[in-house]
Image (cartoon, rainbow, N blue to C red; front, side):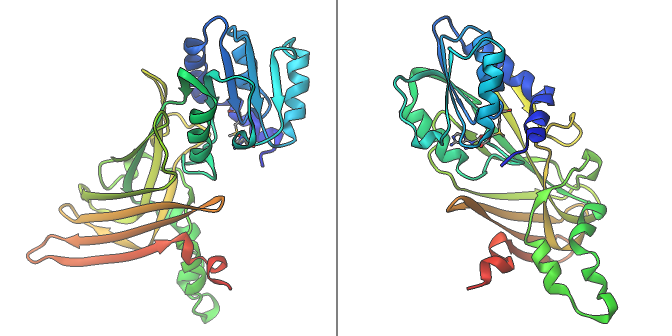
Length: 315
Ligand SMILES: C[S@@+](CC[C@H](N)C(=O)[O-])C[C@H]1O[C@@H](n2cnc3c(N)ncnc32)[C@H](O)[C@@H]1O
């Protein structure tokens, strides 16, 4: 659940908003019916009215919908926006929509029931030939050197505080990923595109991908930086890449079990999976680092997963 301040931060993110606004403006024709999934404080529904939508269905399960309703009234759009407090997957609408707009992502697009909700909306709520905003997300990853970020995961556990072996706590941390901002100077490999979510066809809420990099830089690697680029409409995009102006999503940092010293020519292979279990994802990332010296040598082998966190191991 988001706070009002959280919804405010989304609206204040002009990089995100501009890409959505341009796509919405382009998609709305006179007489358009628009569906805003996860309306929050109602920003996309209000904009849809401003761009000439005949009718907007604004769906939101949380109580913030009451704020959105008052805002709509105060801006003269109460009669054109029909608010529904529910999940889009539970709602039957009296008509299909010409445009469906949503932003149900978190740091990454695999978040709760996002993909299922979009697939459901496309099948049940979209008119033939209708437009989905966004259209596509593209995922990227790079191996990074991020000592400061990594110390959040390894400190103080790595230094055996007060003489105690507290590695279990570090394992709990390193089987967790979260927001972690990096700069392009921290890349030890080229960024690689590893998945594409085409919302016009997507059905599978899960993902599995295999990535291999030839290391290009000497340095200590601490894990992976992962981010997405979005296409809201053909030619209208925003990017969360390190070095680009920071948007609300940022980048995800997937730590490794231990830092690894890399040199040019080393090969890093990673298999990454996200599997939706109930309302949340189990993320797993398997890493294999091989040095290509006179003879091939395994430098590191890690198998990490949010499934290994203690709460998932308790009966
Ligand atoms: C990231 S906020 C976006 C708010 C606003 N649309 C914006 O872009 O500024 C996502 C919102 O979607 C809502 N939500 C998530 N899944 C939903 C679903 N299936 N149907 C309706 N709302 C949903 C959440 O409660 C949350 O308020």
